[in-house]
Image (tube, rainbow, N blue to C red):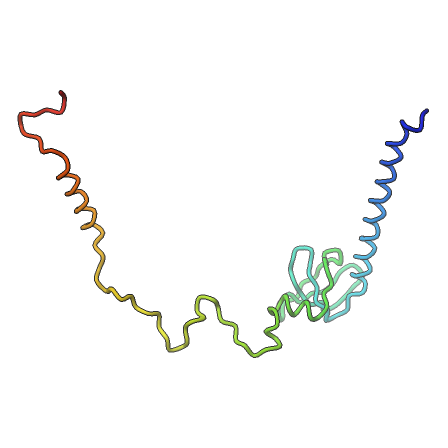
Length: 154
C-alpha cells in the first residue's frame, strides 16, 4: 500500500486522539472541582440554579437553594463552583451589598411615597364615535345624490 492512501486514515485517527484527550482533561478538571467543594461554597448547577453547599457526601451534595430550603443533588449536577464575590454579585445583584443605595424598579424611579402619577391636562372625554360619524357625513356629501328616476345600471 502507498503512504498517500493511508494518510487520511492517519490524520483521522490523530484528530480523534486529540479530541478524546481534551475531553478527558475537561472531565478530570470537573471532577477535581466537584471534589474540592466545601460547605458554605456558592455553586451553579448544570440547570442554572444558584445555591450554597451545606453538606458534601460521596456522590451527592445537600444544597440550600433558598433560606431554609434544602435539596439533595448529585455531584455530577454541579456545573461550577463559584468564589464568594462572584456568587454574591450574581445572586444578590452587582455591588448593592457594598453600598446603601436602595434598589428601585425602573418604572417607579421617579415616584416617592407621597407622589402620585401626574393627571392628564385634557380632562374632557374623547368621543370616538363622533369622529367616525363626521367622516361618514363627508363621504356622503362627496357622492352625488340619486333621484328616484336614476338607476345604478347604465
